[in-house]
Image (cartoon, rainbow, N blue to C red; front, side, top):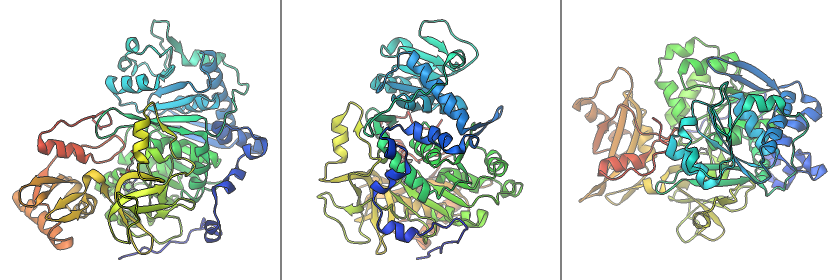
Length: 569
Ligand code: WT7
């Protein structure tokens, strides 16, 4: 096993070992002003507190897209979020009501989201690419009272079919006719900057993130203000955020990474946060790193792989030396990508594992600890993770099983909106939250992801995780991305089938197929060799970058593909 030794940086965690040993979530409470005042609100802790503590003029948000380039200080965000909160109150929003935000990344999105939380309402961010049915399903299920959106997206909001939706705040210069519409800019101008903070309880609602299951309708994962304990502490220790960092999380707030670590984690730590609007392009991303001298960068394997596949000369055009810490989440981080990180940035990419339901990181690679490429790392202090069988018994090292976590970490979801049965399914094994991921733990306590439970392939009596094969496939010079599934086979139970998209400059032919098969056979094992390979221009992926194996499977079997609302175009 190749282990990458830590690279010492000036920002090495101080006394981390000592702190980790006797860590207890109660210690984190002292980081917040509510510890002293007894008054709780995450938005207050993330923004207003820093102004009160003398950081008012510090840049909080560095926003840019193709047209805009703006800086907002903590004081400006405090004022703007008060205005947004007062505007929403004026529209009749009360504590506990749901306010949804359906728009592309922009300062107005961040301001509206903070304003909603400030007044104790529950915010529901929706990714801009959702189409009408997906928007409707989420607004309907949550019974959202107010929606903040842009004129471009309005055609995808079926107002007549949403009886609970009372007002639509339109972020744009023109206001459509209709009683429900109000202008964001007019209302904001008229709104007071007086504090809009509504004090809540730690267990009061914060955010509703919809995540799609493999079948059925999307689930509203409900989180509460108490999550801030974990947002704060994981951002401090795992993102390793320090006062003078410039941090960039590339995720959209429509996904949990884009809120927990694109908003809450960095701002609870008082750190300058970069938001780049618009779509991915290698030039754009490298330019963003250079322009803002980003020091800490949190992204996803799919983005790293796209950067890897891009012309290497592009990277050479930028000075990326400011980057001191890189992290990844969302899907397995291929060892090949970790090696690329070392080559391209002289930095090891740190993997982190968590889910929409968990609200914050649970398993991760700490700065300063050795990294085993391909492993997700170890549980965060105060988190007890294990590999268990279906009866809740812990399995010995190196045995594959259910990745489970002892229930009760601070940012755990508190319910699935209006669906108690779904919620209870996660906790069917006594005392455990069962993730639905298959993994194993090695002798040293490192966790190794193998696939979603449904993805694990049983071939000729062997259980094979698709991720390992996919990772090996992308090491082949011709392969850009790979998705592996089990295809039913009368003899072997299942055979391994790989869907592959090729890198620029390669064309598909039998010779290449054979070469790739032999490569896996030689590098991995004979039983891991895909017996079938099919080339695709693009693989089906969620907008958050996950390869959708269930879609590949449905294609293969000619079955219905199920809910596609989260699939990228
Ligand atoms: C699922 C959760 C939490 C942020 C984004 C995803 C997969 C997540 C890793 C990782 C391998 C990972 C799991 C998990 N996943 N992180 N480091 N290595 N797989 O949130 O959309 O709720 O998806 O993403 O399968 O269960 P999500």
